[in-house]
Length: 385
Image (cartoon, rainbow, N blue to C red; front, side, top):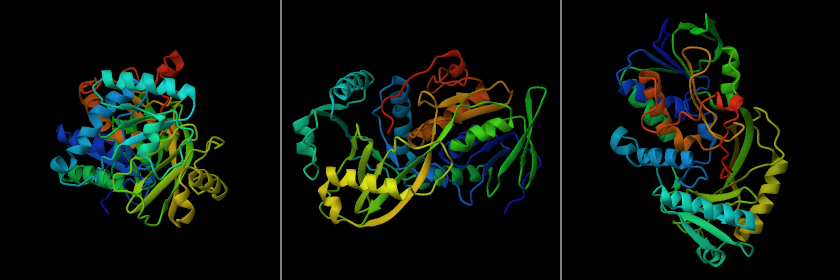
């Protein structure tokens, strides 16, 4: 284990995809004394490592589509740039509408995505049924499909960034928990950890669901709600084709995608209470299983391979928070409300721009600042599962 340094130019709290990408992109810009801290025993085992691995262009707001337009090509180039295969499988997302309100939303979303150069297709209910012969979608009214959506491996992307950052001199440590932040005269001075104190004039809070707790340490209120989301995988199912898309039953917040030779299945519990609990709720898993069998009768013959729960970090408008706070040197990259993994690559780059240049260059995310909540500038995202 590397000893904790006494000082750092930038301390990044959180070793998931945001923190790892930020460390890499800052180092690439020439910052020498970067400290990346992760409280777990391995990088990417917090919210990043417990996500479903989905990556998509299909969102209902222009800013999220634009973030995907920058971030997903970075995943496509990942192996070439960082030498690590991210296991990016482009078998498309197929979103299914089963009520008229969703149909109207889908039409608006597809028109906006097409205008931004994302070639999402609008499908009829019959086309949905034709594309999903293993599923029961008698009630499907419409669907949307984009062939370059799919899945990637969270661990590969996190470790690709961490390894490349370490080669450029970044100190990346696991098992280091932040327990306090010293602020003096409105500026950050140091981070206190379970292993000692490190002085720094710049701290990036990329702690995902725990970023609200980190904010409190610096006297900054961040409206982040941790919400449990859980999923399970099945044993191999030979009936499921290799090009089976990432299917989302929108009204039920129920989704299916290939995982190895089986399926990964998850569903949002609309009654979930804010908490840091990451244990599987067995009762709700049965609800999920029944809903999955109703949509795909084949699941009744499957056995469960694994199951786990992770945390979303949800903001009041389901959009992330980037940039400054009232405490000088304390910046944020958090609040991704369930789609942080896919936007992690570009978000780390954006934070390197903001920290070094004082502005976001690759994508203008200045409207996604912390102040929007008190100023009432919320941007609602419909496509959050």
